[in-house]
Length: 586
Image (cartoon, rainbow, N blue to C red; front, side, top):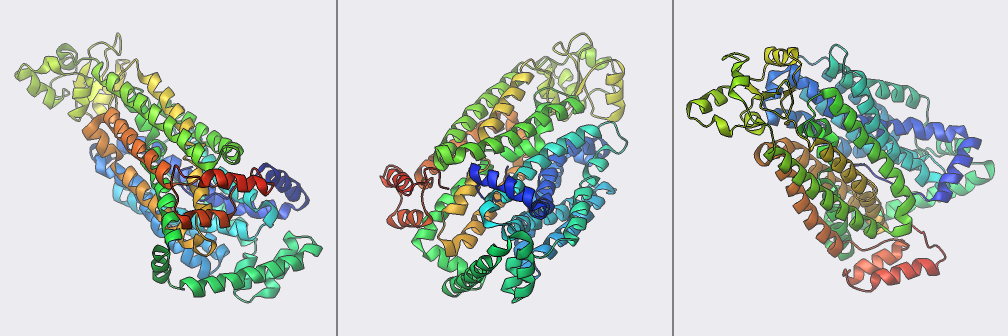
């Protein structure tokens, strides 16, 4: 998972969750209904990668302008940044349920706008709306689930939201594949996103408001009636007392740190404990994005095409593997994060990421240097008007012998492979539908993003291993660290600052990836990510303490004394956890 919060459950909590949900199906219905927001989040992340392949065919401006492709992808991220802030405000003022309903309406409208878009700029407006909906849901849905579920299984239920995010990404690739042969391909891919939003809207209409929000608005009787559906009769009064104490504590914290966001930020940065917590929290959130994960989630079919797989359906099929590995890695993380510790898991994860990014870089550089040559006879075969004008100019200056498939693609032209073998000299042609049809008509392959390469399958393998390295560690652990690293009264503002850092980093990466590949090539871009990842690993080692097995008070004490990577605090902290009888404490 690249974005979104995680509350870490243990194995006992999952067992208790299954037992409680079996006895009280209402609880699971509530969690899954709200959790569809996570599905929307994941679906939107995954679907654009496939839809973009087909948009380039329908709109020449998208095909020719890299910045326009990046804007279409990243506009949803920009909308999500605004939507997350808006979702926090709306969920506090109008209620969690109404905020989720509002997110569904905005998301559904965005899906319809994208599906019916007559030009790229309307697609961008639709992406902005969808991003707003995603941002609102990502902020409100986990909050609603956590406040309307029993405390003993809260972590397990909130984690369903995270699993639905990766499940939504996997579903997006399946739906992309299903519509590859349908008329209006990308319109269906994007329009189908409206269905889960519609389903969630209908389901949420039959569900109540969060009991915590109702209690905070002095609607005590309504809050109690909802708790009676969730808890057994002998537990309701105890939960009401806990709810009262929690609300009073929250009001006391507001009085201490300020009610306005500006006053909360000022007090947070003045506090050395919070400031050191932010060093760790922001470091892991920015690192999560700057390892380049969302280039894979947003552009994986394009990356597969860079590796030499020209067929869109093949590119989508191979991309499905990366989505499946990402979902699998999230489950692995749940099993091992309490056993091996947060920091250790991130370090191993980063080491694997760096290793496989370097391998990816080498594979793409080798593929580029071994690209098949452009043949003058092959190019002339399709006629003077079809031949790439830049290549025609090169033939006049006797420089055509240096032209390869990669030179052709850098000139914004397409490479039509040799009929006998993709690895023999082919033709460099103007990118146009008639030329694609001419090339395909002779049973040749038309390459626009990458070149025929014997190294292509290696690139896909290393891409999968990169995902396997990322997902169990850097995919989920940064969110867990941010749930543990701040003092209780600053947890909301600290987590919010780190989340904004995550979204902004996501926006930077998604808005710049294709431009980087134009200037540096895929190999150079992955090598750049490897360099940034190496720096990020050093910062994680220096700024991030191990919080495994530590009570919140011990984490706060460690930060107050000043954490040092080679100091003795970590060992002492783990010992505290064992002394307290909980070797796997979160």
